[in-house]
Image (spheres, rainbow, N blue to C red):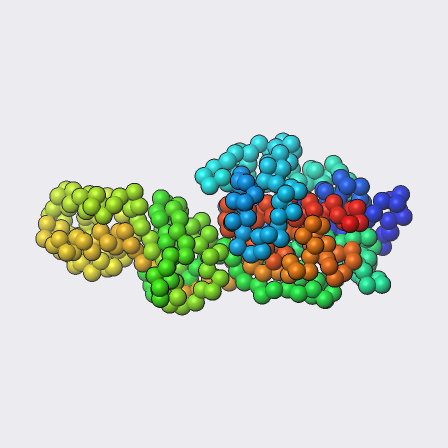
Length: 422
């Protein structure tokens, strides 16, 4: 590909979009529909690589909630997103994809998925729309941004400079580098004087102290309650109900990933996870259930009398936590010991240590400072012709479709503004 100027396109402005993910494709589509000639640069051999694996491959495209509820799920700079979400709302996202032939459904927590449960359907819909509006996808890595008279004038690749009137950086964060998000966009922006706030993982697995989790590695729990508390004050900082998983290093799964977004200052001995294995039963009811099981297995050892109550992989670690002799006959277990068993069922405690590496995170916390971006256009306040969209900006949200909606909303603003020269 050789150097190109806007003269070759009958005076239409040329917009270069860097990054072919959720934000990049939406920005490219919007810019093209707004009258620009658009180049979409993607370093991988196909677009939407990260999008294809989001939501366990199901793609939680948005959250069907009102604006105030949405902003309450954005811990980092929520007010910055007011204009973007007002311009392109969660309802607009639903209409957009259903208009592209992808029927959607709403599940628990107002999470919106394609009816097919296939993230690939979302990616292919975006690809089809890109082709339909004339976006030219270039599978090549951008090496840097080209500057002229203090303004961005294009992008540099191994083939030279591709000139453009505007550039939109949609390169994502530093999470999942295997998908191409390795921080290129941060480097490009810093080279032009932008501030990148400290980067850390968000929506990421959590490591734990001790060997408890490793002893239950691979065990998935459903319909449990997870509470994260501060060790010093006992204050609850997160609580929810759902699914989680034990691993060799600690805990993960939907509940844990959501919890991680509330723990930016995590460190050893600061937080602990408390798991209620039977949240539907209060302690009195659970004690009655335990007595019933013990009557059923009255001649069995304690360790062999829990199969109706717990998954097999959890039984031996659980018995150790209770402090009750594993080989004690259940008909000999005392009331005090039964109370300890019930307490452990309602409060299985895991001391937390830290986060897994950022390359295992779903989202990067931090990014281009919002103080340096116009919230109504996503245009740089420092460099003419430069725009941002998606995860590269210092905004992140909890799980539930919020982060993808942020990508789409900021992309629509950036795509339109870049095409119109705003």
